Length: 204
Image 1 (tube, rainbow, N blue to C red):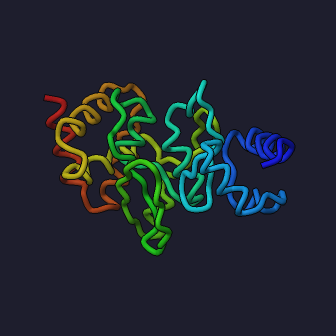
Image 2 (cartoon, rainbow, N blue to C red; image 1 turned 45 degrees about the horizontal axis):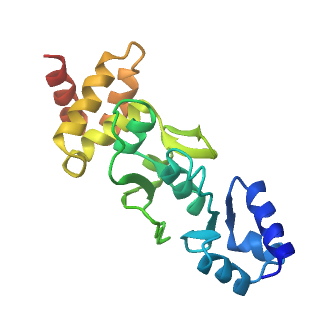
């Protein structure tokens, strides 16, 4: 590969916070053959189908890059449950699998280089309490703190009792915890009794 082509590609990635889609590269006259060559030489990493990251051996990836890459690969995906609680600061340890919400009708494969747990929601539930978050490197889609706690309790069998207990315990310590908002969502999801029981148990 010619040096000027390499420099051109590097500049393109730097302008995109280190990430580019195959479509963006092709629009900039970078061929599929050149993209493959860059991957083979370890210059860029294929993070998912049609998306790439410019490898930075000194700095590495940004903190919580899994959230960033997930929302980049699927623009409608939302960080949820225990992963959203981690983002909101309710648990200290990053979950081993990233919890992601998508619509039931979303059939994108989302094959990433790290494990995810995918939860499917109806249109109404999917849009409720959706927020835009920001981490180093870009913006993400994430559910509100109160909703995330409720979802963590709903998916407690997947997440594990110890993690859910930590989430609930730390949520109940918050001064502005929006408890009514959480319970309203829990009732809408028909898990009001379960959520109230867990909250009461944590207060004893």
